[in-house]
Image (cartoon, rainbow, N blue to C red; front, side, top):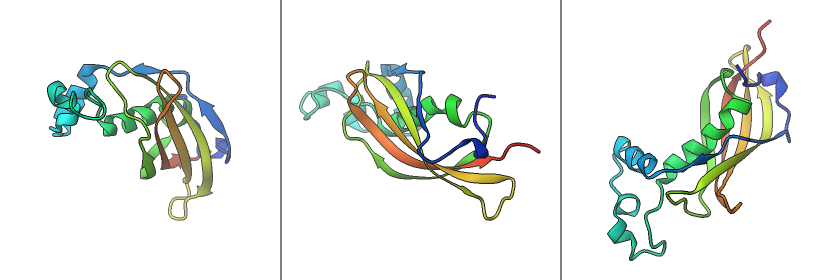
Length: 150
């Protein structure tokens, strides 16, 4: 288990995640199919030639999930009890098939859980960047984290 326990997080702590991932056409196609999102913006190359992007863009919910997923091994793998919420989700630039994404995470705040003495709440700010170091996504995520076992 490589995730950190609640007590190991401090506000301002920053993680530059080493794992990167190139987004494939299959990723986008399957994600759209699994989530029942038939938007032409993600699936129809001919339609997209007439958009401001000129090509298909990757489903933004996939981008959000990938951004957080890239952070898991360094932060919450095996030590999180669940996500409590997502705020300030932003996509300042589109992601295209073939883009390689990397992520950074900053701990925004930590506090004891009022209802669960065995856990605490950590708020993370995640940011994703493409291969040109352009920010393509960001969010704040609250996670319920395990405290270190006694």
